[in-house]
Length: 216
Image (tube, rainbow, N blue to C red):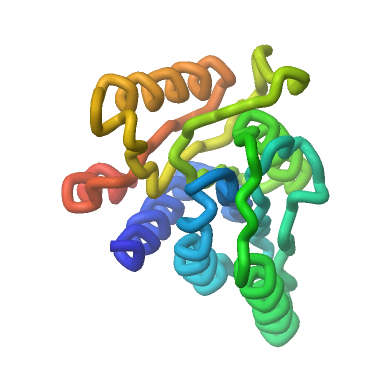
C-alpha cells in the first residue's frame, strides 16, 4: 500500500510541474510524531526514500516533525537542494537518507499536535527555494491538538503551494462516528483553500485516486 502511495505521489508531482516555466520542485514533508500516531512515523521513510529517488538536480526536499509546537526550524530533520553535479547530488541524498534513518529509528510521541505551525514553517521554506512547483506533504491523522498557550487560530498563507495529506488513519472516535473523520478533512480543506493553496488532496483509496492524480 505505501509503495503504491509513493508512486502515486511521484506521478502527481510530475503532473504538477508541466504548467510551470520553472521546472524545479520543492517538497516539504511533515511527519506527525504526536501521540499514538508516532508509531506510524517510520512508515513515512518509504515515501521519503521514493522522493529522494524522484527529485533531481535543482530540486529541494525537507522533512520535518510535527510535534507539540512545530513552528521551528529545529523540527526540520533534514533538508537539501540537490547539486547540479550528479556525484554531489547523490552524496547529498545518501546523507539525507542517513539523517532520516537516524531520526526515525526511535520516535518518542509528543503530547500535542501542531499541524498549523508546521505548515507555516513549511510554506516559508518552500517560498525561499524559489521553485516553480511547491508541495507540502502531510503524513498525519490530521487531528490537531494544541495546548492552552499556543495560538494558531488565524489565517495562514499557502499561496501557490499544493497540499497533500497521506496515511490519514481513522481514530477510534471516527469508527464510532464517521462524521468526525469526514468533518476533520473538510475543515482542513476549507482552511487550506482559504490560505490560497493551489490544490488539496487526500490520498488513502489509491485504486480510485490513480486516475485523478495522473491528470497533467
